[in-house]
Structure formats: C-alpha cells, structure tokens
Length: 177
Image (cartoon, rainbow, N blue to C red; front, side):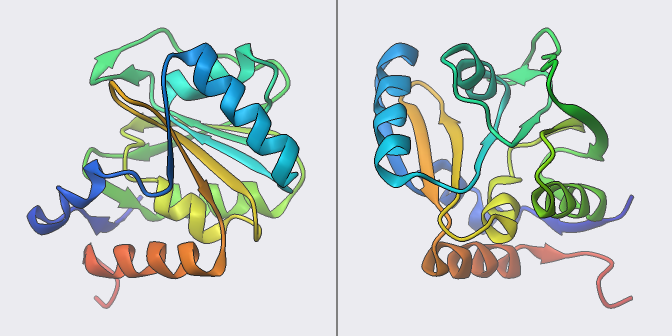
C-alpha cells in the first residue's frame, strides 16, 4: 500500500460541499427521491460511498454494484455491514488520503459486472472522486452529506474532469519517486 493522494489544507473546505445534486431529507425521503432519479436516468451502474448511505440503499431495495464502507458513521465506529450478494475486498486507506490500493480496488471493481463491497480499513471519505473517475459514463455515485441528506453524482465527462482536477490538486505522494 502506498499513499498517492493526500488532502491538502486548501482543499478541506471543498470536500465539505456537495460534489453533485444534494437530496435533502430523512432516509425514506431521500431514498424516494433517489428511486425517482434512477427510474428516470436508468444508470448503467450505481456506486455507494459510506456506511449509512450504503445501508440505506440496500434497505430500500437499491443494490449498488459497488459499495465502499469503513465501519464508521460521523467518525463513530458502527457495526460492519454485510451484503450477502457481494464479494468483499478489504483495503487499507488511512484518513485524509487515497492509497494506490484503494484506487486500484475501485477501478477494478467497476470494470466487471460482479457486485463488490470494498471494505476500507481506515477511511473512505475521499474516495468519491476515484469512484466518479472510474465509473462508467452516466453511472450514479451516491454518498451521504451529514445532517443534510445524500448527494448524487452523475458520472458525466464534466464530472470526471472535475474529479481528475481535484485529485491532481491533492498532494501526490510517491508518484514520481
């Protein structure tokens, strides 16, 4: 495992803002809105990033192809999620970083059609841009926005470019050494 990206102080505030469309409300409200978006958009793939949002999607009958969790919600440890239909890949990803292991696991999970649960030891908070970057065109990436609702990101060429720009702005560690 090698850290390839690290959050810089300048970018911390950026990651607190929604990267896509914010669906406000309770879990039942946001899941109802999300189901309507899915019915309308018919995305080729759905990816969830975060324990609470992954649990809520499954609970409401939405099965992401890839779920990325770290057994934490609002920085508190939660019961590990088990998705019976998914193959589990365990990776290391320390807080405020993105490792090569995390990047490769997400990229590879999105290449196939198998349902994958990426179980992160560390933190999954910064993995949304990686999911957007490697997601098929028009896929939906869903993550939680604490105390507000859920964010839905459609993997368009524009969003992929923005994700790449964000990653490029993060400190690259070990890339050119």
